[in-house]
Each structure stands twice: as C-alpha cells, then as structure tokens.
Length: 185
Ligand code: GTP
Image 1 (cartoon, rainbow, N blue to C red):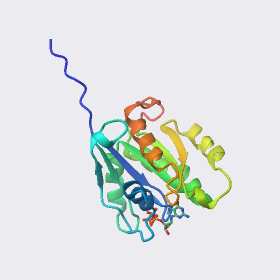
Image 2 (cartoon, protein in one colour):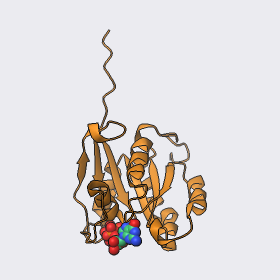
Image 3 (spheres, rainbow, N blue to C red):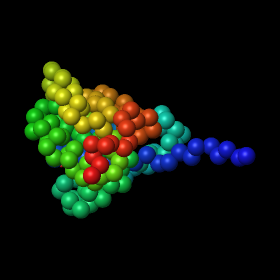
Image 4 (cartoon, protein in one colour):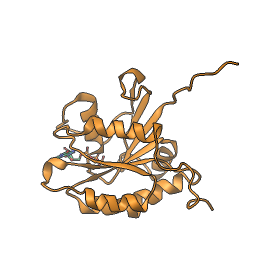
C-alpha cells in the first residue's frame, strides 16, 4: 500500500476592512519591513514561497480596495479566500462596529456551507494608549469562526509577521468546527 504524503495547498489570505484602516500598509510593511509613507490604493497580490513561511506552505496575500474594486469583486475574493483578516483601526470605533454589522455577515453569506476562518486585526496601535481587545472578545463570542485577534501597527511593524502567521495557522490548525449546524439551512 502506498501512503501519499499530505499535499499542502496554498493558503490564500484576504485582507478586508473599512476605508483607511491600513490594509495596504500592513501588506507593504510585511513585504518591505518598513512603513510605506506613500501607499497605493491597493497592493498587488503577493505570493510567498513555502520555504520562507513559518508553516512551510505557499501563501498568497490579497488586498481589497473599496475605491478600486466593485462589490462583486469583493464577494468573489471572499469566496476564494482560505482565511479572511478583518482589519480595523484601534482609534476608529466605527471600523470596530462594522465587524459584526457588515463584515462578518458578508463573509458568512459567501461561505454558506462551511465556516471560513477569520482573524481580527486591530491596526494603528501606535496611535493609542489603550487596548481594544476586551471589546473584541465580545465579538469573538458571537462568531465562532473568528479564530483569534491581534493588535498591531504597520507603522512601527509591531506584530506584523505575527498577524500573517496567525492567519496561516487559522487555516492549517483551525480550532472551530468547519461545519456549523447553526449556519445550515
Ligand atoms: P483603502 O484602500 O482606502 O481601503 O485603505 P487601506 O485600509 O488600504 O489603508 P492604507 O494602507 O491606505 O492606510 C490609510 C492611512 O493610514 C495612510 O495614511 C497610512 O499611512 C495610515 N496608516 C496605516 N497603517 C498605520 C499605522 O499602523 N499607524 C499609523 N499611525 N498610520 C497608519
């Protein structure tokens, strides 16, 4: 009998979130290890080869821009994502409220049969003296597919590589069930 080794698929990480929360900056900070002073509306799709990722899997990182992209394109991106990072800005309460009111329902709509893992990313931690994590835990209790949350700063590079590692881990070692009776019709 031949036992085939488990083939590692590509992990597709999609960043979504309200305008100006820092999605493009996070991706560019990861890639260049410095904060980009001038950010384009959208970063090109990035492919990271398996041998330089912590979990040794090829990883694509995909940016979303509400300015450049349509709602149909957003839905298509969400359908194809293996994990979605919802980015909010820690100094912008509305971007936090919209996690439960807009982004989570949209992700569920686009993954009706299976749960798509989600990581919540609080960016711009360099601008505040407080943490948003207590409020975020309440959101995590409401949506079981949220695997984890992390606060970071594209500007100071704090927790940037960690955030992409958590996203990979959410796909490769999810803690929530992939099929939810709650979501089934
Ligand atoms: P859209 O493409 O419009 O949806 O925006 P985005 O989410 O891609 O945000 P973008 O990366 O364009 O950043 C928006 C603004 O926030 C820019 O002026 C960035 O310089 C700034 N910014 C991004 N990350 C940080 C951060 O960690 N700290 C601070 N202080 N500013 C940041």
